[in-house]
Length: 311
Image (cartoon, rainbow, N blue to C red; front, side, top):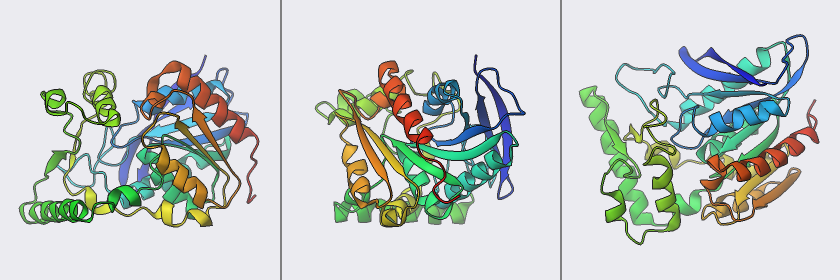
């Protein structure tokens, strides 16, 4: 039976809290492949990573999930400022998570597994962190310029609002949070009749007990209001052709966001493979057992057939 233990490590002086998933009959004198996992935006470690961590441990990996700084159980950089989705800070947290995993005497090679927005963080970071030998993504937001800059006026409005929020927080010393998707609105469904399937699916996950606060009390849909300043800048997309590590992209065949992986996949020049899970949506790869089983099979086979390309 697999097991797990809570761990901590420091990231730029901030205590980060994580969970380490260990294989059945774990023996600390043996060497296991490691996996560092990054969650969908704006999740904590207990949601999607809590589903996949034990499943990857069942395949013999030591899998690490963690809460980004200021989120979940992790500490924050400034009192009162929590649930900050600042991307450069996440780069540092991920690098330090890799450092932590590599410091364990029973962990050998390390793989990266990123979900949704966490896939974008992984793609951006491992361009210059080759301690990760292979990268697999699931429902990942890897190529996002077409979304961010597709409507110039909407982009300008979002950035100006984020800039205004930053200025107000600087001047007052008080945090400003907002619900990016509106999922905390009790009338969300009434106000979004006829909305795209992906929008309604997001609410079904984050706005209900399925994936929301009733089940995961450390999670919140309310995040720091300057978010759009850093999410607009996607290093992974612009350096995809520089990726050295092999890449495996996994999407649901019915996912409206699959294009974000498709475009990134076409840019990658390293060894790569692409998989669709039949009938699955974006969120359907988060917690639907039959879909997760297929994802785990693909990821396991991919990691096992790729030894470290730069060893």
